[in-house]
Image 1 (cartoon, helix red, strand yellow):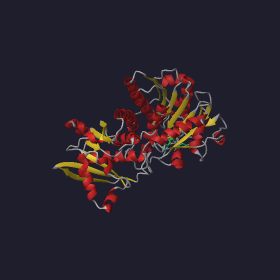
Image 2 (cartoon, rainbow, N blue to C red):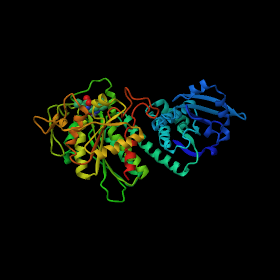
Image 3 (cartoon, rainbow, N blue to C red):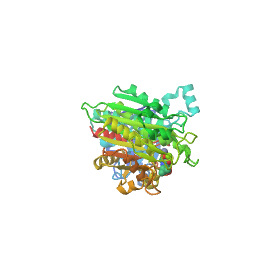
Image 4 (cartoon, rainbow, N blue to C red):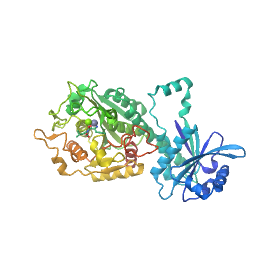
Amino acid sequence: MVKITIKNIDEIEIVANQLVVIGLFEDNSYSEHLKNNSKLNVVIDYLDSLDKKKLDQIKKYGKTIALGLFADNNPINTLLIGLGNSHDFNKDKMRHISGLISLRAKEMGYNDIVIPNLISEEESKLEPLVEGIVLSLYEFNKFKTDIANESRNHHLSSNNEYTFTVGLNHADFDKCNALVKTVKSVCDGVIFSRDLANSPPNIIYPDTLAKAAQTLESKNDKIHVEVMDLKKIEELGLNGIISVGKGSQNEPRLIIVEYNNSSTNDKPVLLVGKAVTFDTGGISIKPSERMDEMKFDKSGGCTVLGIMHALSSLNLPVNVVAVIPSVENMPSGTSYRPGDIIRMYNGKTVEVLNTDAEGRLILADALAYGISKYSPKSVIDFATLTGACIIALGTNVAGLIGNDEKLIQKLLSSSKNTGEKIWQLPLSDEFLDLIKSNVATIKNIGGRTGGTITAAAFLSHFVQNVPWAHLDIAGTAWTQDGTADRSYNPKGSTGFGVRFIMKFLMDSQ
Ligand code: BES
Ligand code: MG
Ligand code: ZN
């Protein structure tokens, strides 16, 4: 648990056992805000006593130095943190810096942290500050027996409890503390998403993922969860989902989470998330190297569940429906095969040429079903869909493809705010030609070229004219080769997408 309180800088008490964190810009005076709290004079005196060269070293972006200062014989445990040039400082740097502060405090054994001057008057930096503090402290350690045993034996749960007091000058403190609460709820959604995505495939498979989704019902009475089992999926004719799932002993599920809280009878926003709880590739089996990472192939579904979690804590006045097709893609005597032709939910037929291109098959049925059932005003899908997306955009930028420029521009603008980078790829007619089949409406792979776009072209057959955006999060859903070092993205699942979709939904009110 992390508690964050915003106070006027002169009201902050400085006591023993605290860590006092002082941010230092290269080009701004440090004394301006610190002098508003007389307890901090000792810090100003110390900094004044340093020669310029030494001080300049400390001010470099991301640099930290711990000091034991004394005021009237009382220790003031101080952490100096360099912020670099103030003109280059932006929200993402704030997010990373506040995460570094959390991690340094944790390493040094402090759980009471005071940050008097880091954001001074800038309320706009409060949001990323909170995100960095909360998201960097995330750890997926519930399967580490030593840690589990320790906290059982010694009741060390307080180990994970932190209090942050953040100083601001002349701000609307009620408004700031309300904002902190909102941001923390969004971060709880990110953490819910990370916990599910990080879970191993023997623990989270379609049925247990569905059970995790069902826990959302008790959070808010506007949430309704429906889980369709194999029989129901068969009755509906969701043959894409059935085909991909039939090689596994773990039966597929279609998870539907409805959140209805708009006063008007607004059409909902439909969110669809790929949840392949493990992707071996099936009969077109993947190489064994790093196949373990394919537990993260459920990340799209987990992102969508994280969003529903955040929505229910915030009680936002919107209507949102999440549809999450969940399967395990396994090779066996009952698997679907290359050469199979599947009649999909919307009646189109698909020639399977590679069983590892499974995500588009389950998403296609989920999209077509969700659209026909809910007549949404817009549809956004999340999927770890193609390795080609990593080749095209790397591991720090997700691919964005859609059929509605307005929706795309809104998503681009929300994601700029949260630092979750997305980049639009074109969806022109040529790509539709690449997936034409000789024996069916379409085939489930294009050629070697433009793999992320041919996958989206495939999906476009199942959304028709509804405003739709597809996010390929293959590179960004978890930390992998090339992932930028960011304190707020610890190893494993990142929960990518939860924050900017929440921004999108809050702005759409
Ligand atoms: N889940 C994978 C995509 C993926 C690969 C995500 C690596 C993240 C990291 C997807 O199901 C898949 O296997 N796609 C194939 C498609 C191909 C057969 C057309 C791929 O990308 O190789
Ligand atoms: Mg695959
Ligand atoms: Zn996959």
